[in-house]
Image (cartoon, rainbow, N blue to C red):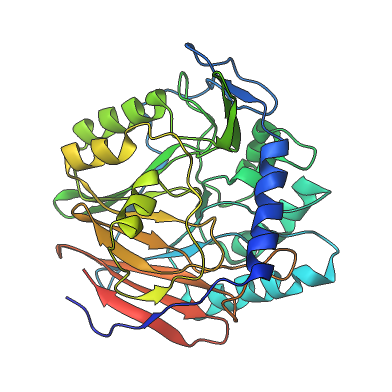
Length: 356
């Protein structure tokens, strides 16, 4: 059911494509992971198989508020650089959105930073959450380990911010920021939020090497499957940075967004590792929520779930053509199936109010 549909198509111009190509090249130049028969051990750039908490741990179990609702605010692609005036718009956006929405939980879907010093940049853009005592979690983006610190170092620094609910990397699970957050009501777990680390970039070895964005690995899919079964396939949303191949397939097949701005083609990995198929088979994930493509904030139904982009939350350190920065909001109600979602722009204007 939809309250109001708002669909706008933005035509990509040459400037957009050039800046997009620049960011893509920057990501691929830092690729250090190589697809081989066995996964690499935990390394400075690749992340690799993590050694940390048990894979079965839940980061945190939340409860609905006194009014029976629970609100999640998604930031994405803040691309923050501390001390850079071009980032002021990102800081303003974060502070204004937190005060306007007053969320119960914030999930940042990556590309938190875009320059040196990287860890101080991450701490500054996330500090407003700590200042307000708002719990938050992150799913790291491809740029979050490209400016000096390893992915592990960046993740650990973020985990030490008061209010961060991410657990340490999971034993035997690829990447760092893979986490499970639950939302419980009177009858038990009603909602699950799965966070996946979609990593950075890889080189697929063959007769001709293929450079592309990284992909969700088998160990991450198995980690999700085990949690899904343990939680009796409770309705879920999946959050990560880089969209899946199936989004591009849907658009190529002529499926159109039902709301939002479609300002550039999606940039997923070239390798399909089967995460979408696992979502379909288990039947619990209702929406795949990502960032990465700054000129998109649309909702597209496909395969019995929704592909949902967050709203670009950054400043002017990278390309963006949507206009005002903002965030995406999700609201859940105790005992009520489905969810509400909308985009909130800086200043408070609401776009794309939808009920599923």
